[in-house]
Length: 172
Image (cartoon, rainbow, N blue to C red; front, side):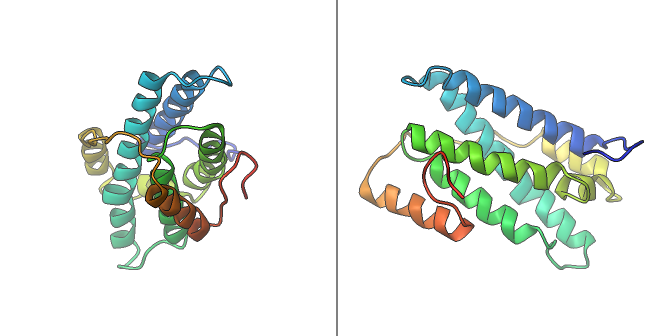
């Protein structure tokens, strides 16, 4: 729930809008329970990796500098979630993989967008406009083809476990 009179700043607006864009791409990619529209899912994958990169390379370091060199209390959880999400983007998008991505994003996005979340903190930074310039200029990542090898699937399970999740649509 947003506090009365609260007006989100540019970082919050920009990245919350990106969350909605990514949610829509994922919804479109898996609109049919038995089929994934691979081209749309590929756009989702690239977009989510870019979004994670913006937070990891731009926002979290800026917030840590603002916080006297100490990571934010939410930084460790956000980074574990980012690792789990990135790992889930490696294998083919099965029902379990997509369900787990959705579950993580649902909880993760609330932490970032919520009161005193990462985005609001970054909006309060003295250099918020410089952050916006860097966010807009963030490059698109290179996205490699899916891999369903035992090594990749093992890495997915380990990343999920570290973040407190399990593979499946009802995870956590």
